[in-house]
Amino acid sequence: MSFKAYIDNIQAKTGKTPDDFKKLAEKKGLLQKGKIATGVKAGDFVSWLKQDFDLGHGHAMAIYALFKGVKKVE
Image (cartoon, rainbow, N blue to C red; front, side, top):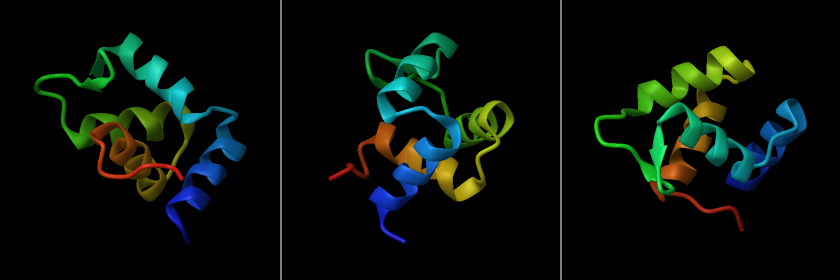
């Protein structure tokens, strides 16, 4: 499955775009000015996304990879 397909599946399941997740993560203090906040780990994102949005581990890590700048949606 391509990275874009992961993101498309997340949006279909949650109704949220990557920008929506970015805004929500900033409200939770996981991101600051669009970057991962100091001391925040991947597990913090994964736990939040699993609990609040019922995402699986792989899909939660895809969102984290976007925020970390490792992956981009093309």
